[in-house]
Picture 1: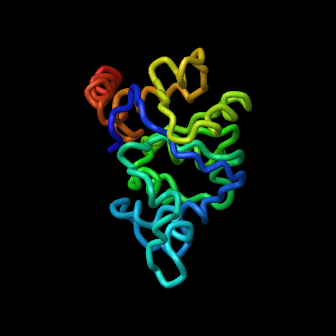
Picture 2: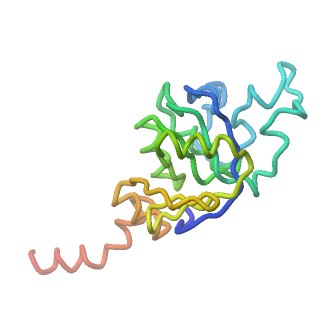
Length: 192
């Protein structure tokens, strides 16, 4: 079940490349599992490890503390390519809670929201400011649907209302439904 998400302030990790696809996020050879645990080690695997499987020490994703860099600012058209729920699983397990871009693939965004990863689409000017400030502190407020960076005015973003409710409550779709079982049982008893 996803963690409750209302507001997060974190440093950013900037990956400015456009068209980062799901196979770059988690290569297909790691899709043999149905569990989420441990997939963070495969996140951006081919960017973080050499052909021999050895860690590339100076790879950007290996030089940060994922606990301090929970917001990924990515280039346009992030997570394009094939649909795989493993992509948001890997990003979450690595430590990210928010992806910010000017464009995020629809299927990925849907999978992300269902798993507690927040996709935030911003305008080109806001994106350019975030790209120019790697490691900068950014706040993402799901309750207000705002992104706040530095002394700039808050930037509104759009999030599906049901997905937003699930994030704020810390439940997935099934958890939301289970929470309503008493009301469902009551309705069925009244209408039987």
